[in-house]
Each structure stands twice: as structure tokens, then as C-alpha cells.
Image (cartoon, rainbow, N blue to C red; front, side, top):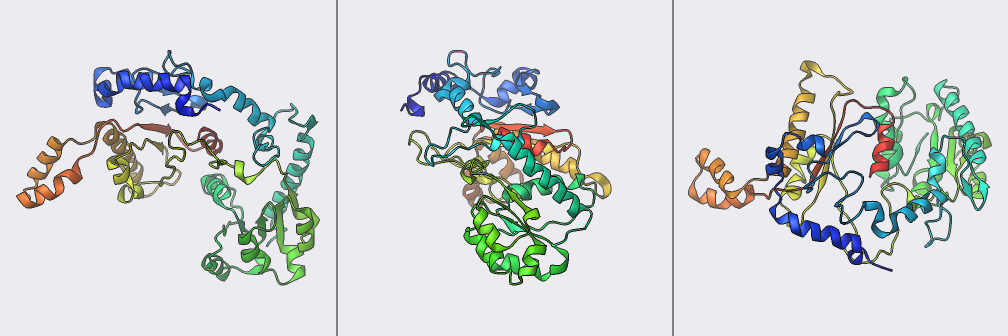
Amino acid sequence: MTTLTQNLQVKKLWAGYHRHGSDLSLHHLFEGTEECSSHFYLEPQHQPWAYSGGLLHKPCDGGCDADAGGPGQVQGMEVAWECSFSGDISFTEDWTVLHVALSHWSNTPVLVDGKDVMPEVRRVQGKLKSFFQHIQSAEWKGYSGNCDLGPLMVNEALKPYSAEGPQLWFVSNVDGTLIAKTLATLSPKSFLFIIASKTFTTQETIMNFLLLAKDPSAVEKDFTSLFTNTVKVKEFGIDPQKLFEFWDQVGALHAPLCCLLPQPCGPTNKPHCWGEPGTSGQHAFYQLIHQVTKMMPCNFLILVQTQHLVRMDSHPKILLANFLSQVEASMRGKSTEKASKELQAVGISLEDFEKLLHHKVFEENLPANSTVFTKFMPFIPRALIAMY
């Protein structure tokens, strides 16, 4: 197996970087042409994505450096793409992985070992639709929980589109504080537990929900579940009409932002992947981004039209100003000369000047791409998951 660092296309990309990278200055590129932003610009689904903040000396029109070939040619990406849509990717666990079937809306079949899985997917989706109608009409009430990262993100993102439906709480931590605080504010007669657990044996599931369910009649009435372990779920006693199975093809290891090990140890194989909404990150980890010794490329995303207007309507403008400032700071950095002038302007002592100067300096040319959404729409979370 050829490691990524030994791949011919990757070697050519590095050669191109060494040819141009030492002379490349992002802010000089912007100053040199008014068309820089439009050259490094895509608009999929009418949503602008600017990659002018990357260390690129010419646009990537479907590929990278012409000498290196497109990114799809690196490490057999085309083959990997085909395998991901046929489910043939989890050789370490020896099962089919086919999350794509759950978001497949055309009438074409999705085959696993020659069998179309879509009729079974549509059957469960039909049960879910009926279930949602019972919830929206307040005919069913009850509780909720388990792995919440994806559902919590989608729920928060789509709140402005909800029709005053039921309020949702997410409890996934095995620490008892969260579930204790959540249950203290609720009445068991008015809420529904949703146990999202593939095996029904996860420790968080057992601790947070299975051990709390004392009354068999309450389990039948006030619980529902997403599962693959039919035996365990039936033993628990949930009403069959409130059971929504999914399949081994939808394994957690292949959920968004997860990866399988082992990986060949060539380049750094665990990227920094974290962030923060709004400006809170500026008071936390942005100094690490700007001043870390190892380059840490980043992406900034923003909505132009806010979902929640507040008095004076100044919040969106201030947020946008911070957004643009961070992109510019990543591009321009701050030289020792500029930092010296700023410190001298405030009239600090020589001792303090010498202490503070190197803390004010950070390098230019930090790759920072920006995505600007005109307004939030329901398809955007799926687009972002696909992109990342």
C-alpha cells in the first residue's frame, strides 16, 4: 500500500508548494488584483463559498495544479467514492455500510449484495411519518436521550422552521447531573423518551434510561426507540408501533466526522477539528490558531440574514465585522514592526513593551476559507455535513 506521502500526485503538489509557497503572500495577491475573490469562488446551490483565503496562486477549477492532477486522482479517490455508494468500505468490521440509502430520495434502487434495500427503508420512513403526526397532534406524550451530537445540531439549526412543535431535550452524558436536572423540570405524564441506541447495550443508554424505567406500563406508553437489536428492545417492553429499526449498514463508526483505525502513519492523520459559534472562540482558542507553531488552517462560516432579530439590529453587523476581521487577520498576520507601533502608541513602559511584544506578533498566510450563507435554509446542515 502506497502511503499518502509517497503518492505521485501528492509529491507533485508539495513540489508546487515549494516552488511558489515561499514567495506567496495572501494579502499581496488580494492587493494585486480586484478579481482575486471572484477567481477563487464557487456557488453550489446558490450558496457562496470563497476559498481565496487558501494558499493558492491560481484557482482550482475542478482540480489543483495542472501538473498534479485533480484531487480525485489522489489515493484512488474515484474507487473509494464508488465503494462508499455500494457499501463496500468497512473491511475492518466485515459488514456493509450504507448510510446513503437513508437520504436517497430518487426511485432508483440501492443494492446490497444484489438486493434493493429501499423498500425496507421506505417502510420505516412511513412508520416515522405516522409517529411524527401523533406527536405533533399531542396524541402521544412521553420522554428523550442517547447520542445527541447529530440530532442536537439539526434540531437547533431547524428551530426557526418548526411549527411550535414539542420541545426537545438531549441527554447523552453518563454523568448523572444532566439527566437529574432535566427530569427535575419535567412531568413524566407529558413527555416521551426516545432511546436512540443501535445495540440497546450502550452504557449511557443503560444508566440514563433503562435503569430509570421502573413502571412497565410507562415503558409501553411513554417510550420509543431507534434500534437494531430487536431482542433487547422487545424484552424492554416498548409498544411495537413505536419501534423504528435501522440496519447494520448504518454503523456509528461511519457517522459524520468519524473514522476507522488503523491508519498509515505518514502525514499527521488526526486533524484538528473543533470550533465555536459566534465570537466566544476569540476569547478561547483563536490565539492558538494564529500563534501556534504548526499551521492550523481554518474555515469561517456566517449567515448574512440572522434568524433572530434583536433591538437596534446591530448584532448581525458586529458579528459580520468580527468574521471579516478574523479572515483578514489570518491573511495579513501582524509583524513585529506593526505590533511595536501599536504598543508604543499606548505609552507603556519599556519593561512592559519587551514583555508583551512577542505575544502580539503572529504570522501571515494562515489559510482561512470563508463560507457566506445569505440566509439559513433546511438543506444547509446536510450540505455542511457532506462538505466536511
